[in-house]
Length: 138
Image (cartoon, rainbow, N blue to C red):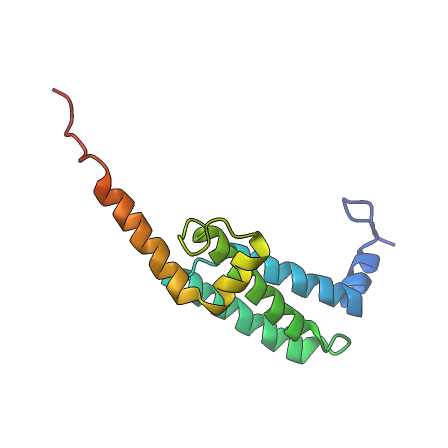
């Protein structure tokens, strides 16, 4: 049996990822990775997320028969990761200050637009109250 550099038989590794548990772990890892790179304000990030998700769904439908729940697991993990990224991005919103993380998560999930607008207003107000920047020293 061939041995990989990790000391694990190649067929064992392939057999594991072909199993139901392996497919679920791959789906979860892919969704977490995509949600970590998701930037809601970037068009390229959205397009990349859609392309990766479409490719995963197509592969899952055609190749992952032993794990019928892989696509729903991927979608749920991607959604949760996306909301968590927004909580992190807009945690300085006046609507979220002083709230525990679980409440920030639920508020962001249900009132995303209001939280984003409040955070942007707060950022604009804090920038307008700063002293104007000086030019280069001569």
